[in-house]
Length: 424
Image (cartoon, rainbow, N blue to C red; front, side, top):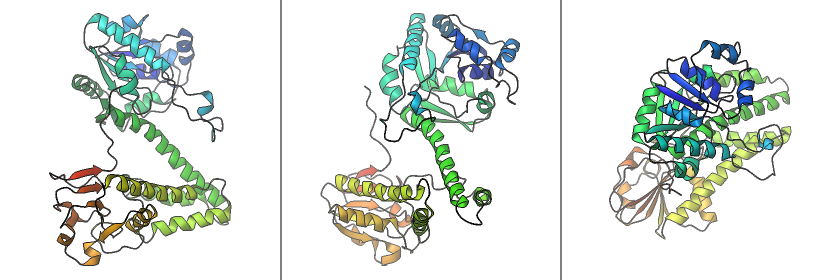
């Protein structure tokens, strides 16, 4: 394929090199010639990170366009890899707690998109614009799409690569993120990635793709914060060794280092987890941790449940509220530490009366007894028996797990699925 790269900085130039090495014809464009000269001297070049780019580019067939118009004319897919900076204080080298929170600066991206789209429209031929810059959800739909002409087909395609190892990471990505806006562009970009490696191409909506990128990075931050909390705990605990503690947790690849517990739903529950968290919450205070991560987790659990209670109040439409499930997890009769009871307390705090709280495994009653009249049914536990319930017409079903099949005459609130986006 013929590929264009707009923006030859710390991401764009190694990306251009990586794509060209896979046999594609690649044209690069950088508005700042001094930046290109600077980046050519970086140490990343090959998969092993040795050498510099000047040497690699000399040995490659990478070509440099003198203008946006030339870049567009020579390319079928144009990747935009310009910067979306924030204020310098937000790059991690300064304290920001208590300061105003800021979005990225999208001016460079908007200028690039506008120029590229104008050049595409002048040529009158459909071309793919693939944005790889990091943006917040809603940016592509509300700020980028209005800049596009008829022949400019958008894909949001951020990378899970790290600066300094872009070439290596690009070749070995676990998955490629595609924010889909146009079917033809989707087909083109999937065909392109089939030439790079066999990683899964994860296709989703624009907003989902935008979220995946920033949450991917922040998930790493969360892991590091957790590990550093363990490090401080161990430093202040006689006989403890953080490498040995974390060494054991790293072995737990079924629950901890795995996809387990990564689906939105009720808060963590059961006979063990809540009391363990609250015990560590106590220990953190006794130990004098510099930052009490466990205090934040306790607060998160309670605030998330309070939010769910307020959602139930808002969506119940004055119907009687019935909670489905007391057990702390599906298909068992143990309710110790159940998140449903925490929800019940939070509903009481905002004066929502629960008509019935039912669990067939604990109460032993017939599930049909709760289905006589329309109500606001809240799924708290994913018992199999609940999956095929026939709710009375006029009911509202609040499905925290997005699991129950829809039925005519019943309004479903699938918690975690936002409303349809509106173009601005």
